[in-house]
Image 1: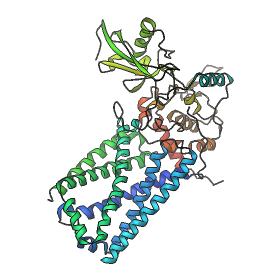
Image 2: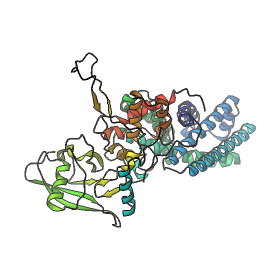
Image 3: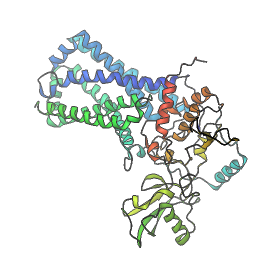
Image 4: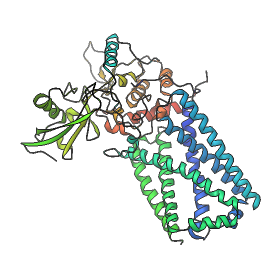
Length: 127
Length: 149
Length: 238
């Protein structure tokens, strides 16, 4: 039997804020993913525009590129986690399940960004 | 502001009678409804495609991060991966990736506008424009990628 | 596609009685003519073939909202859905989706009604011209809300297909109309009600509710207008 629940316990205005972050990160990604895709598929003359190992190191050795790729990593992770959250919440989760999902997605996001930072850091150090 | 539930005693009695009569099936079809575009409008098609591409891109994100770990193993490991990644099949997968990015990204821009109450009455025209722009960009990208062999 | 006199259409109708293990579909060949509606065909089945077929209807002219069904997977009011507009060899009729089924084509509308915020008046001020003449003893005109609470929007909504807690298009559209014409209710309370994960932010803009609505409510457009107002709210935290 369907019921109408009282507003959930999340802080005031966080619901519109959640949507704003999803939309905002998405718009930012339009720029960042375009840069990323062009850089990795349409710049070098190799097949598919894919960089060789040396070309990857040369690319990631540029500090400006490191900043851009880190920004891309953070923004895409935020957008992905918010997107997954939206899909999960569409299943009409209980309040407890929502809290668990939130915690799980934050943890997954943190691990994802951390791994990406390590990856970029190690490669940049080899450049 | 309260939610109206059980304010009418007659309705309460009816509800009680229904509960006593036993469970009824909920005539909802679950997540299949997200992707069933038969006899549905353009907005539903956009929603379905956005959801499929979104989930696909999340999967790709982790696949990509896993693949990039090959770089940590050095030049030989990366070159070996490139040997696979530059095959025609994988280049086609790259085209599919670009399709997903365009479909999700351009529709996302539409949703950012419409979902905040802007250009709502133009939502169908916006989506048609996105389809045209996306198709042009995808064709250009595909020609460039597949032609680079 | 029109049906010449003397033709029949095959109907495949959802059947369920409480106590049954599950649902089934019964088939009937119904005589139709070019202007037969779905409701007329269902009534023929009920009167001539199977009196146990349960269905709801009242006005026969799309103003009561009680005869909502799904015809070949698409929401519509049976009384104004012409069979000439329904393609396919077989016409499948099912109850509206995302609500419990009580009996055959009769859905339990209580969960639909429960989603609406209270109070729930169903009359609004008319948009007639200020310079229009009214009889001496009439201050102004009211008219019924466009929404006939048929539930077709909720049936068509892909979010409601999986989330019973989502208040749904009808209730949100209603809340937005309350903002347009507050009628003495607290606007902030309406906005607070709508500003939740189960409210306006659960909508994914498929616009199927607007496609399904037989009464020009345009629920999706109203939900987006509601979100625009929620997004620009400058409320001090409590």
